[in-house]
Amino acid sequence: MKILNTGSVRWTGGMKDGRGSVSTQSGALQNLPWGFASRFEGKPGTNPEELLGAAHAACFTMSLSRILGEAKLTADWMDTSARVTLEQLDGAWTISAIHLTLRARIPSADETTFSELAAKAKAGCPVSRALNVSITLDAALVE
Picture (cartoon, rainbow, N blue to C red):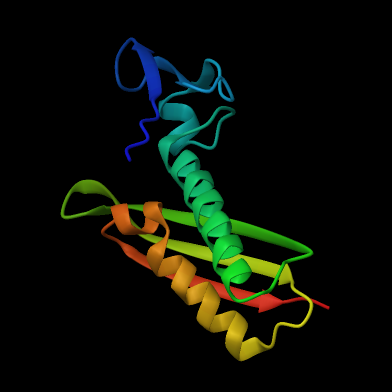
């Protein structure tokens, strides 16, 4: 089975003075603005790295939910963030790392089992598998 999803952008203008908009097939994002200033100068709008981070956090968390279910565990809640590092390496902008941070409340889970299952989700989620960067994880149960 194949599932095809589409994200698209429209760009006008040059690199620094141009403007873009991001949309998704589902309509969850519709003409969301992005450009040089939102990517490199902290101005309002989105950027590819934060979109990738959101996608990775969502994918990892859904994968972990499935893995927890297989272990007969269910989370009360899970909060995941993904910090994407963009830096110049050898003169080229490169996504060099992604750090996932997970905080979760999972009744009946012990730290060892939780850590093992979170690591399995990190390694196995489709976005992790698609990326060839260092992906780290900080996972903690919360009372």
